[in-house]
Length: 334
Image 1 (tube, rainbow, N blue to C red):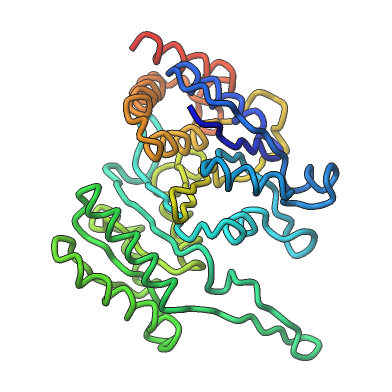
Image 2: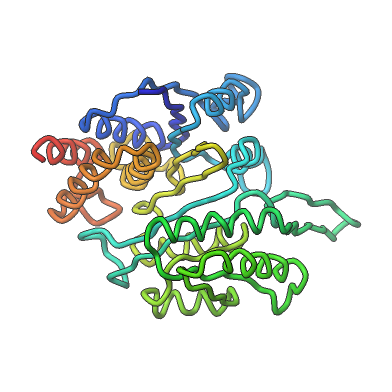
């Protein structure tokens, strides 16, 4: 079994990471974990938020599991998440969203996949002060990146027998930038006659998502809209604590992460919910063709969630430890 890079993260990150490693081990998945800090902790230890040794480890191992890392708002260091994606060219952000048993939500039967371009758009971070009080931020859209993410979305849809890919844009206003993204998606769609293609303006798409999410399938978005809409979709099924995420690049490179916050107010109190990172680890197992282990974890998780033994954020009495114990027991009992 090849080694895997492990980035526990900040706040509750180490707790949920420890829980997920325990659950993975219960299935017999026990790789050598190469553990690294990132963000504020890495600055203390190495003088940088993204140590070169960490990047070298992911490049060598091709797979990483990552807990949440703090990103300061308006000041401080830049996003470690964005830095990882840029450094490793993790161009595709994959966010499946579906309902889990006993998780309170406004909708049932939600089954969406959000595919977000991960490398450009406003997240290119090209900003400057024009004059005091005026800032210009550049939105970068290229045909190459747009066609690459569209190809990823259509390949995913075909492989997983999804029926429809919907491109989300604002090409009615940003006719050049978003127009290029939409044109690129249309071009790629012609190579996939077995998958229906359509498009929606981003504001209309958001309205439809909060009214009839069951009418949408695979959503294909540029970076900024993808960031916003993927969190909106998480809210349809109970929040960021119950959805997974993967950042994927060429050659099988993938960083699988929890996208919720670091929750420093409950760090160290055995209250954190490891579900999001656990579901991300399930995506990792599927990426590694460990489908049997992924299936065993999903079956066990559904049993535990259906029992109501969940953490306080989901209205239950469980601690991080007791929830993890319950999932491990369910795996062992088969």
